[in-house]
Length: 166
Image 1 (cartoon, rainbow, N blue to C red):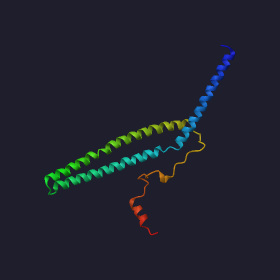
Image 2: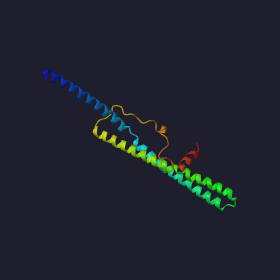
Image 3: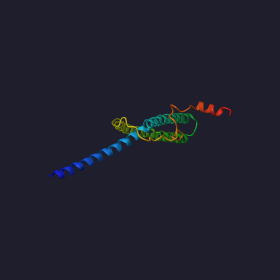
Image 4: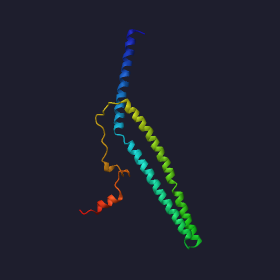
């Protein structure tokens, strides 16, 4: 290999290394913006609230179904009507299995979000000290759906607000 060929190879290698460095800087800046504007912790809290709310609603439905079944058994109604009520209560029990299935799916999504958040945190550690030029601002808080139950006003507070004279 001639000296000229060696120099050309070195220049090509240098250009490739510069290209890799440029690409890495771009990925690093994009990752920093994603980490800076991440709403994953909030998403996990939202999913936890969904799990809690569906579990509570399901328990209320099942308790009411049990009560209806007991009332039907104690009522002085024809056996055919009692069986009809019992069949409908059974359908309520079956339909409530959604809570278990949706809970499993939500926990799976939470696991995936946790993995992604871990990966983004690792990328953030690699880019520590980098500040993005223009971080994205979260949209208006009023457009982000229902509040978490831990920060939402109680029904009594809402009733009080609407009962105040103008």
